Length: 213
Image 1 (cartoon, rainbow, N blue to C red):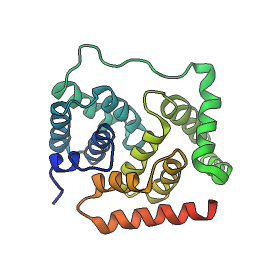
Image 2 (image 1 turned 120 degrees about the vertical axis):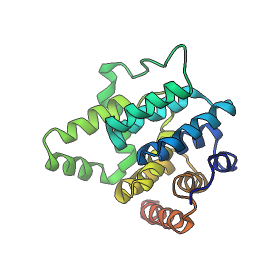
Image 3 (image 1 turned 135 degrees about the vertical axis):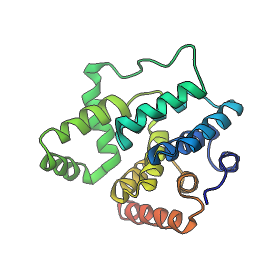
């Protein structure tokens, strides 16, 4: 049985607003809407930043798709309405390609060219979509720093059992200054009470990083 939302949000070791984003993403990616609504209610009661939650949900489109993201935004607007929903916030269009490629290279490091080539082999449009839209338009948005985005991505991908991508974004989180304990707490937020899976994810990320240092 998953821990209560209030228990997770009260845990130390992770910024409260970041924990809320992770907790909301974990519920949304699994389509657990009753839990998602409990996260929103608890976050609102604690005075957390609604715009940060909304920005996390926008990023979630890249991981669990439009249908669940749209449902998540509907739930957010119902449970936690805002007189002025966030708008805009992307980099200028001319700056997006270079910024997206720089972020992609920073996350994948020496594997960046190989990953880009793999995407191109999958489909002619896939590489362009990932670099131009996922990285250039969404992940470079300054509303959340890269460190926060990578922690969130690592946790959500672990919840979805997307291990290769989870490891890659775990490396990215560490590259941007996240601590191992912050990653563990984010993973725990998504995977609790399965501590063995949390430990296994941390070990996989650690093994992937060690040869690069």
